[in-house]
Image (cartoon, rainbow, N blue to C red; front, top):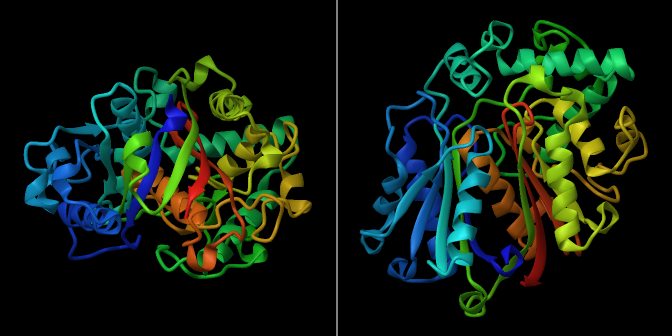
Amino acid sequence: MAENVSIVASGHTRFGRLDGQNLEDLIVAAAAEAIDEAAIDPAEIDAVYLGHFNSGMVADGFAASLIHQTHPGLRFKPATRCENACASGAAAIWAGVNAIRAGDAELVLVVGAEKMTANTTEQVTQALAGAGYQNHPDEAGLSFPQLFGIAARQYQARYRDPLPAMAQIAAKNHANAMFNPLAHMRREVSVEFCSTVSDKNPLIAPPLRMTDCSLITDGAAAILLASPERAKRFPREVGLRAMAQVNDFLPLGKRDFLAFEGPQRAIAQAYEKAGIAVADLDFAEVHDCFTIAELLIYEAMGLAPKGEGHRALAEGTVLRDGALPVNLSGGLKAKGHPVGATGVSMHALGFRQLTGRAGDIQRAGAELGLVFNMGGAAVANYASILEAKRA
């Protein structure tokens, strides 16, 4: 069962514009930190998995065995690269969990990594657009800011103007990132600044402003997964109490974008498997690739009815000191979004939260957390419930 697999160690580079570090450097740094934290001989690891989107952003088209550069003891270990757009990191974790569940491994190292900033904004936008539907002219030419701009316009037409709530989400996540030394952008911005189109906050894809968009980032993260028997040997343990994956149609033309049915189903399945409700959670790290996405995720999580996601902000629920703080790390919006690393980063920081080692972003007494990592426009959806076991 998935809930019997545990996270027992983590690694995490700083996120940002990391000039002078290539993809291999990032992978090795995150993997080495996880191995050092676990205090094991790397030869004990049975398999490695890499979450890495790439899509032409780097020349490394065959990167899984770059993890082996971390230590000679990893030589000859099975290595697999997993790609599922912005959910590539969660896909790699899912593969590692399944290897343990199948009895093929007891210890699995999962690394997520992306090197993006060596490209121009235009090149990155084009690379990421490859994760959209290419076989219809109405969708093939759309960038992801344009896709989520459509979501914001549809939200206004169906429910209400989402822009005030989106500005609040941006300001919240930037404020949270001020407490996270690993975050890409540790700069506080006001709701007023995020609400106002200006030279410093231009429209990117109307009505999305720059402050509504996640960051182009370099970085890597790693976790060590263990079977129930092996997990007992480690001083710290966080259980994967439940995991769910739901994939929806790729073409937007075949579904109601605002229903966010893939995310809603994945999160609901994770709740059901874990035997919990949203009120039982102590924190959540969710996929705020654009601020409208975080607003829709509030509704998919069950924090508010459809069209009423703004209430989670107005009532203070998702704020740093609220009943269910969302994206204490700063989220993709301010922590950064190195695509293949994002899902692994969420789990690594969740592990640190639940073992009381999250520093200034610590949620006191946290016992249960939700991680939601999404690939594409709500296409590949992964939800995990993390449970404190041993700190």
